[in-house]
Length: 115
Length: 114
Image (cartoon, rainbow over all chains, first blue to last red; front, side):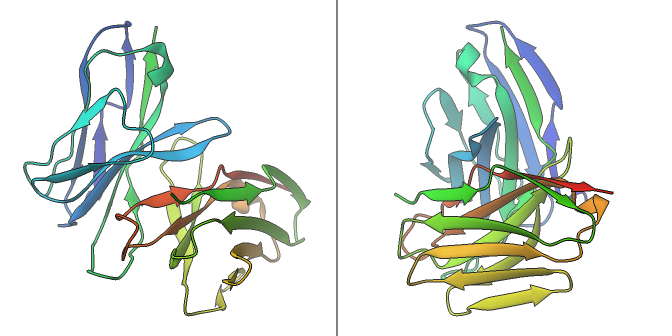
């Protein structure tokens, strides 16, 4: 089991460029989510998905798009990168038991710099 | 929506001492409170969690307490060791009505001095 795999590990973009951060999990988890981590602000939820074909917004969704065409993959798209999107991005998944919470499994992150 | 506050932001202790990290949450409907440890260059990993029907939970040197009335929960690490040095995050979520969102505190950087 690889768990949650994120690619790339590092990325530098110029303002206005677009890119997709990849996330894949091999645990058959229904729930997947994206967080960004900034100094002093903890982890803030960008978007999440409770299953294939279903996505919803988190705390800080502006500037990001997601889709969930399969259970395994949950890519995060930046359509027009801005310096404010410089951050470390984490993908997380969990086994969603209806009405019960279960812990998140995180990938090792993508460090994104926008110049 | 839910808001989680975490204190202190930095904590330095001597090896063998105890460390306590405190969190408060705002949504009384939150019913699941996990704690994560993040080591340098890695993603957060669950170390312990507690559900709203339990007041305290222990796992070896780590314990978590929950006061639902005051909307407080705390992480206690006893007999700290240098390998406990990391960033710790508390979180709160409510799968029943909260839209499946887990909201995190800002984190506590723990230093354990040998």
